[in-house]
Image 1 (cartoon, helix red, strand yellow):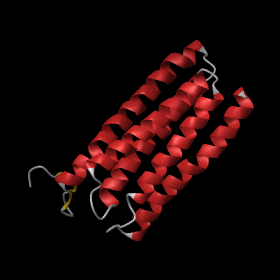
Image 2: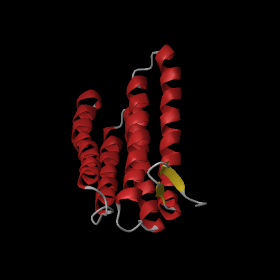
Image 3: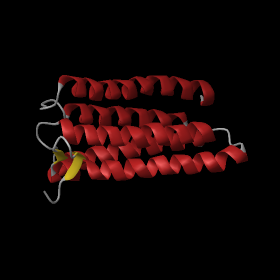
Image 4: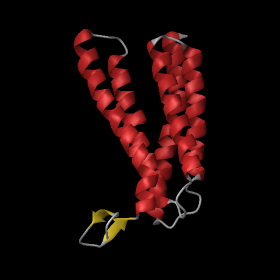
Length: 167
């Protein structure tokens, strides 16, 4: 079974190579965001930078863990592996959105934060539509949709906080 990524060898479950290819860029970029979040926390904590802990948490939770979960979830749950073009758009929009939110917050530019929030919502809608048809168990799909809902619900909350803090 070369080229397959084992999930549970005892149960014989594997991830097909096409599904692994569909998730690996999200896993790589998301993992890099988690590492960046740790580095931001390490640097900004001792330097007492105002938005440091927020930026670190955002990098880890939204840009990192969220991206990994969305990419893996879509690759595993979709009945048909999403096309490279679709994944490219999701990756681009998700990361441009996160960059805009982070940069807009750090440089106190609310319109940039708002643009990032709108782009993030578009990316989340792409991830949602990518798993319309699924072969997964219902609880897996519910978990994926709950993650999307949580991220989507955090957008207006974050935008209101940005306006209150920096507007």
